[in-house]
Length: 262
Image (tube, rainbow, N blue to C red):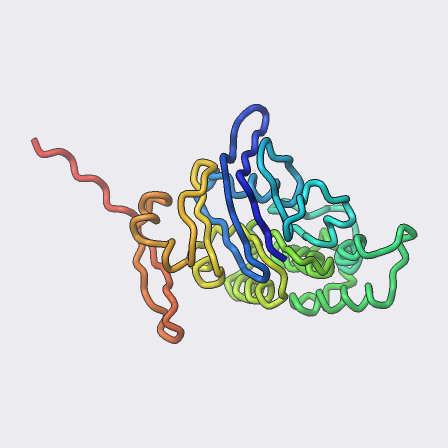
């Protein structure tokens, strides 16, 4: 499913946080949104999954205005994993993942054999099948994150919106989760904090600063030393991966400016 964000501006409490954003994710693409803290990444994604309404512009799924769809239809098409989404109610892991099936169930809320199979498969895919009977609040941060990703996968969306999905995960889990999301099949729009992970896993990157898109394109074309110095304030060294040849990034502080000559 294609995602088109057209001329999008977002205001919160009278302040313009995102301005005139245009973004496209082709069907099945993994599109990353990167930028410094406070640049507007989460605000933009919150509008993309309908937690906020735009002041102007449209979010379209295969041409349909997403904000005009009914709740059930919208949830069948798009699932979201916000940064802060963990409930502390005493549900089991299996019950949390089963919430992802609600858009597919009848008004009576009957759980089918397929619902049970999809939820179990989603937990296994994120390596959390053994946690099914555990109380969700007792899990570690990384375990909670994997369970919430399983809930999103159980929703069987055509579009998956992720806000910092690797939070609380160790490096092995970060690599596993991003590969899993990519292989799952939906179109993915994700805000990522780690630029090296973004470079390795995304088909297209959009760089946002001050609520505006300042660059977009394939990661190896976008993440130039000049852009990283300008937007992120770091000196970047672009090095090829020893096995794949893909560009990876190593960062240093920018050198301090020299004092003017006396």
